[in-house]
Amino acid sequence: MLAVNAAVLVGVFLYKIRLPPYIPYIHLLVDYHFGFTKRALIGAIVGLFAAKVPIWLVFPIAGAAWLLTAGLFVLLFRRTFRFDDAHMPLFVFMAGSPFFLKNFMFTLGHFDIYGCAAAICLLLVPAGSIAFVMLAAFFSIVLILIHHIHLLMYVPTIAVIVVLRYYLVQGVTRRNCSVGIAAIAAVSLLFLAAQFYGTMTIPQDEFTGYLQSRMADPSRTEFLQFSHVWYQPISREFHDTWARMPSNLLGVPVFALLIWLHTPLWRYFSELVRSLREQLHRRVVTTAVVMVSVGYLVMFAIVFDYSRWVSNWAACMFLILHAVKALPASRTVAPLSMDDKKNNILGWILTLIPRVGIVRPF
Image 1 (spheres, one colour):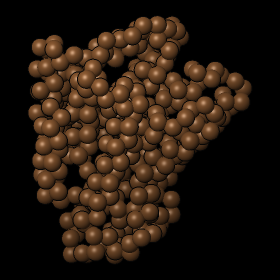
Image 2 (tube, rainbow, N blue to C red):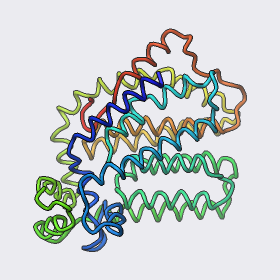
Image 3 (cartoon, helix red, strand yellow):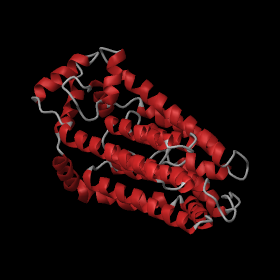
Image 4 (spheres, rainbow, N blue to C red):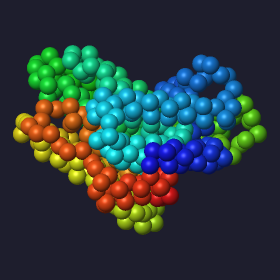
């Protein structure tokens, strides 16, 4: 299954690089030239090294982010479960899921993967001091500067990781509680600033003219059609999403089916939660899963990239599972077994599904 997944990943990559990277490319052009601007951090960093940005640069940057995330996940899995025969089926269900690395390959250039990489880093680094909370706040701030949608997409999962790895282990004190509240306030204020004060106010022709001056090939003006994204208020995004809602809801049964195909993994997750020694830990994990899921439901109502949101929700569940595994348990949970015929069939189906997509399934 791992060999087939690797072949599928190569196929997805070869297909992806043949598509014009409209939104990812224009993100590399936007910086802070006109003042504080949403979605501009990556473009500002690129601008430090390249005055003119070629289109092909999207794929080396996105590919490096993908390789980094995949490598970090392998390290995380090895630390949490080990690569032995008993846990390889679990690795196949996670790493080979169409929700995870394969869909990140299809969405090369989009910024979802940076949130996933940040969350994995927080699962790998030591969590024994208040510096861990501050690092999580720093990652969250960077993610919102990259794209403010991370407030709902990966910042809640980062908060869950901090609670499970730090606060449940170290306990809540006046000092670490104050730092946590300050971190939440700083991240929230930055999001509000990006959402309401990061929108472009200059004439759009002036903005697109500047973007064109940063393009290595200024004749490719078809990429500039997406510059309106930096002018859209949240009310417009909400309106566009609900205008597409009837057709987008047709994909819900497909998403439900894809989630059901991961049943062995969800069952294992549920058993991990039930095996936790402390009742408080069980309640906190359950509440955390609900809160992360509610954040994604809010995102579904605002932005219509449903395939991305469902895929990232599943990735968040995979990461929370790793955090739960590190909590004290009263019993050992049996790993997934491919001797189970149903697990084997579902594993092969997930292996053969190349990705979920960006807006509609497939």
